[in-house]
Length: 138
Image 1 (tube, one colour):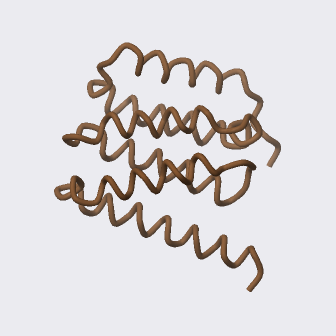
Image 2: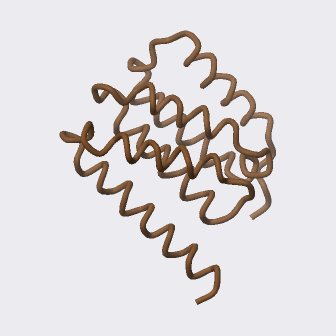
């Protein structure tokens, strides 16, 4: 079991955590503080592109898309989006298409839940920055 195995295990448990949170939307207030804290720590620790970085970002976007509008979680979800915008440039560039599509899906379904001017400014500037990036070669 080298480091790659542990990364695979960590990614698996991240997917389980995300799926559990999404399957319990009616009780999200109970688990949300732990889920949000965990994701904020993971996003802060991302320092290079890779599978783990991709799954952390995609799962944060999934949480935002499906939980936006749930009582008490919107400010934390916006914080998660801001954390994605603060990722190192190589990570953002490598995931630019995934992030842009996630933000598009989020805004298509949840634009009415984004009410603060500064939240709109943050989302639109993130989209503008992503639009200027060349996706990393696959």
